[in-house]
Length: 399
Image (cartoon, rainbow, N blue to C red; front, top):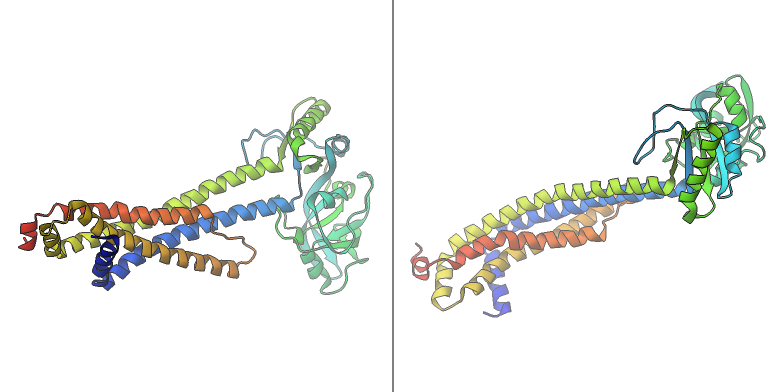
């Protein structure tokens, strides 16, 4: 029996039971589609996190007051200690840091005329714009200079500006924050939610010294710094810790780097993606059981054919291949249909949510093809081996 004869024998058997074949193919296709869709969502989440970290700026080091023992993620909690503007000034003088920006934050009500809205107010300096790569839709950012200056300038996020000024230009206008009056000098371009927890479109920025007086604070929320050379990130972190330990007479701050945090998130999301793929693969096992059931029924229905083949001298390996080919063809057709459906579904999701970078990773395509092949072979072996064990005389007699 030549290969083409073998293929024709298997296809002829499948064509003879079109509904059964279609259901088996559909089962495999659903499993492959699920694997591709879930891995695409996991990969999209990982890419989204990476892109968001890229918008934070490059070579980022973040210093928080309080020593927190942690092995990954953003540290919260613990006993806090004051991180002062004097500490920020000392950090800004470190040779490995290109620039550093202090941050004081609180939620206050901004008012203009009869309109008011609550928003997070960030006290910082001009360096924050460079570190976070902030773009302005109009005007300028906070004026550069010593952070000790107590200015009355304010920069608004795009949503705050739209809600308070209703289409008017906010530049040069006066906004009240608590008892203080501020002059609007700039409006941020749309930015959205930050990985550090702020929706910058709904925030406002004022000079840090003014913010600490307004919020009645003595400690900074954090200091964000940019390292000059990426290769010196660990050295810069060590410099920061050594400097603040010397100033505070204790190691009472937490320092984490952008690349370490990104690595932690990426590792978590890779595990999540693999877990989703594993869960989706369960449906492929179910589809494989369906193929095995179809093949067992096929062996039972075609006992006379098997008996005739064996009576004519067909060796057991050929009969095994003939029935195994049916299972592999079912799985291959289901795999191809699943790949097409998965790609179409992911493409549709990308159209509906263009900001979410959903994508099917190449390893997922390879894994899906391999899984569909293994399903066909794995669940087709037993029925095929059962066919080879039939006695030709009993098979011809349909016993």
